[in-house]
Length: 319
Length: 320
Image (cartoon, rainbow over all chains, first blue to last red; front, top):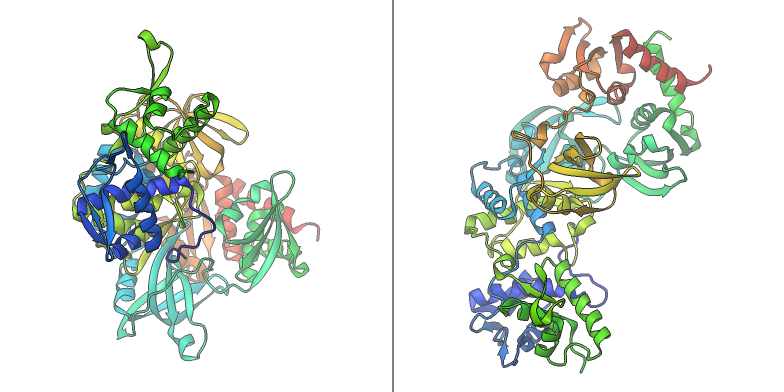
């Protein structure tokens, strides 16, 4: 994510500024005084932007305008607030804010290491009480190995895994340094450095699907802990090639399941998509499942892949 | 002097919050001296823009039509008790929510839930988050798909409101009972008025926006649990409990047994392959699952399931 640096074009819209102001004022009044830098960082403004917003707030007020909303001034890098006036509490949660908190909270309760009776559960109960109880469930139960892997990522412990590669259809033993465990699109993944690749001087960061780890053994050896940013686009197993597929509407689920590089809608509800292909075997599986609802456009070498695969599977049925 | 549009809208909000009686537009304009245009039409248009902006930000502006000597005029007010956030979170609860929002991210930016400037996830943290939390949890995170309409549906579930939305070219009217995030998708489950029975819809397939009706109009059935509203295993959807027997080669036997559980194993053969019993009530999901093994799996029975796979493959293989 690129959340740190505020990259914007043009002035912020009034509604976004109002939203921020309505939480900044009660926050500031509760504290009385706060370092300008700290407040600017919390509300993701530059110091000069924050000073400008506070100056504006100090000009707002109720008739006859001697009674300003907030008695605020900035001096020597500190913001001072006077007696609380109108905006003493933040506004209630909006629907998207409430949803974000409840959904993230319910999901986080299922992450490895979560405490089901801890403060998060209490916070969610208070949200339910305020918003009305809603049956909102998020399923992301982590497989049992995840606890070990999260602990290894935190401590830098090296683990040995036997991993089944869907691209190569073989299992291999690897020594890896777990860096992060994450859930995405219904599956759990391990982001790790493959230490043998690292020793060979190669790009060593790999993503493994947890349900394809056939064996997991902590080694007791440790390497330095490294914080990693999850890549925006990634593949369990290494992806190299891409293919352009023409999908009919019944095949569109593939777009929802796999990362596509581009998508071009076509008449009738389908689309032409370019997607990363982990291996020919991987593509074979996809094509034979999509059946008549998909057509390979590029590369030409794969145009007969579906028929060839169907024949080899039919052989299994004695045909 | 051109005033900053934020100034007028802030003043309007403050005025409505502080006023004990509902105020008409004339009264508002008189109080906020020189801030609204003098010409009636322009004044009304400017006020409507401000009101829409405040409501868009979630400010509960109420209207009432006056009687007496000002009969027919509309007056506006904000109930402070409805406006203010009152969660009474303890510090450890604030930190827990902050950590949860750092660990569980929303993928995509639909509905203003993703990353970037002015997203709701950020303002939610400003309202409830702790001051001192570093935020990130080491080592683990998850992402949930951000889909437009989720927040509205969540609100409707919580307030027992009926919703209407377009789905596959038809307008559906639903009493939503629950929302479920499963396998990377969001589902809304409830009572469909036209179908007269329980229905499940994928939220990302809803066309356009979700309209919410009056609150507190529908009850939720006793004991309803959205996690059990439809089978987690797509191969079981359709019900009836039908199963098929599938032979899986040594290479994939371990993975198949891990996925299905040891109870699904009917036979372990000397060559290391297994025969497993697999739900097949949903023929599409069953076919997709079997073909994922390519030549390492074979449907043994029932005969019609085996035949369906063979026919699918023959059509795909084309003439020899």
